[in-house]
Image (cartoon, rainbow, N blue to C red; front, side, top):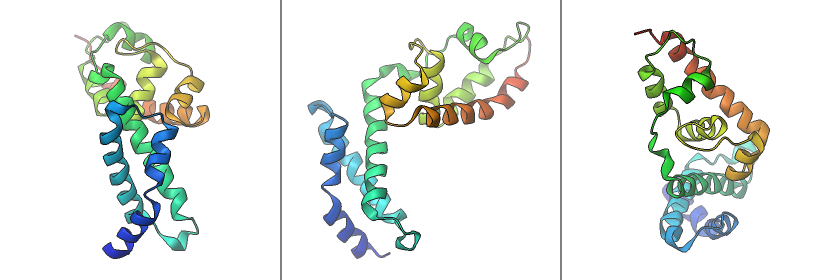
Length: 170
């Protein structure tokens, strides 16, 4: 798909951006930035769109816009994502044996998780001073099912397993 076709798609489907922003209840202080994020997401959707797959562009675009704007809003509204670390919580959550005390590798692994996985893990287990949340609460907050939240948390734990095995005693 050439740039002219992408521009035509963007012109036709730009109304999806305010629709997603309204659904997400974007506040006035985040409106301009969220709109820019929505435009970037619309462009990403136009680049990824393949008509031969049998999907409508509006389905792809609305999903990408909603996801990207929701992530932006969550990060902006939640300053706790600065990842202050509590090793005691980590030991309880990840079931690290008492003799293993060097959590720096694990801390770095959590910081390197994709933002969605990191947010879900920190919300689910109440890390970094955040309150524990249920799968359903997290799903409602970011607009996905509780089963999808469970899958993402499982994937994050699988990514963290090698770090847990490599945690060395002092």
